[in-house]
Image (cartoon, rainbow, N blue to C red; front, side, top):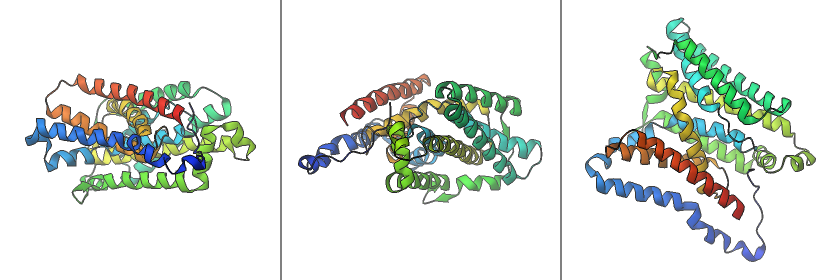
Length: 329
């Protein structure tokens, strides 16, 4: 399944197409608001509070970086990168291991962590693009490999004890929210600008839509695909650094729990703003839609397994909806 290019509608339809697309563009946002109203009616004393909304918008920053990393490869037609969550976990493990256990300077540890994820992203890209190995096979194997390395480095335990001042990188409050929320907002804004208003963005979309046509048009297809994997690794590393800054330590076993929400939010984003197309703003909205749904269920006291059902159900529905909307384009 490739992400389709934007097509120019015939003149006869140009005046009506935007209006006709409004309901589908904002349907998920409408459901999100309806969900907030429902939780507010059922648990007003718990849900309709400032701390609740601070939790929703202040705790999803690693997921924002992971979904943007996943979009880097999806947009060029490389679906199902299963290594993004383990890569974030690798970076978030390297920082406290080097800093706390080996006495490294914390910023040097951060650079090493990011360099490691960029290197893994480059290896993924080389194997997929230049060797021709299937994306799923490469990223599943590499994700398992780096996940194992993270467990080995941490001795399968949480490593904590980072300098509290380092937490300011993620937790400093701005307008009542941690500054890391605004990191994610800036990332999404920049990604949206690149995709919509730069030659690089057009090349990414073009390669994702049809590699052969893009190659005939003079685009360096392999270079674009390889660069997407490297960029994905970079974003995973940055997300890992921000995650460990906010937590003060990291348990690598937790990284696996990010994978399903990452895919669910990314595919749910295809139903928002640009129906049938992967887009950063839609994905950003999808993240907080899911966060609202899960937190509301937790406040209602449902069992823990319900979150897996919720994420899995949303992923199935989102992928199905993405397929239908893409066909309608």
